[in-house]
Length: 101
Image (cartoon, rainbow, N blue to C red):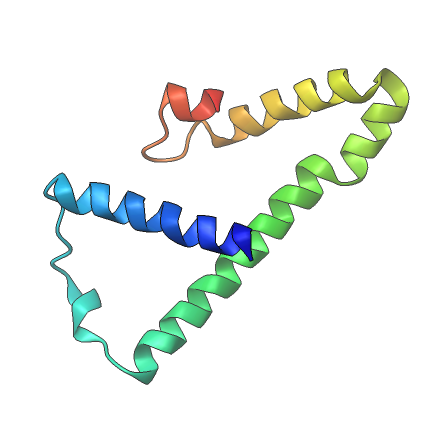
């Protein structure tokens, strides 16, 4: 429960910071209402869950287990973290600071 509350507070602060910076959404997103909102939210949620599962299984599934058995946990974690950053370096809007996190 504490984690859910922290997440809600955190995302609220992020949205507040974006709004205070002057960013405004002026698109067709504001034209959907009711059940349409729920359908789009469910669709987006499915896509993000699939992407998250793919990334977790790719970088922290069997590959991490096998590398940990061969080289130890920290070398495997470091190698896979570098690989994760390299895979994401071409993402639009990704910064050097974001890759270092």
